[in-house]
Image (cartoon, rainbow, N blue to C red; front, side, top):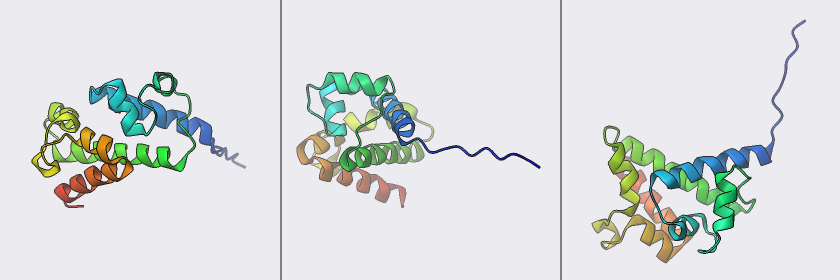
Length: 131
């Protein structure tokens, strides 16, 4: 008889891993603290939350914040697929002015439009990738 060990889902642990992942991504993008907060939908001066997430504390339980993290990771995936040989461009893209966004950076679009801006940036990349 073989004993089967099943991994018990631990939502808090999973949200901690998501927090570390998204903070590493924001570090790769070299964004200011204010921009990082804006992308995550938290108050611009909330450095404490960013520090907690960086340490792996679970990212917020709100649907908005979890969806934001999902879209940010999808944006990263799209950029890595669009620029497989140019990691620097993939990491710089979010803070580079783009004609498709009226010469704003994708980060500025999210800051100006909030969650809708995040969806606009993701949709743009999805289309560019042919998804």
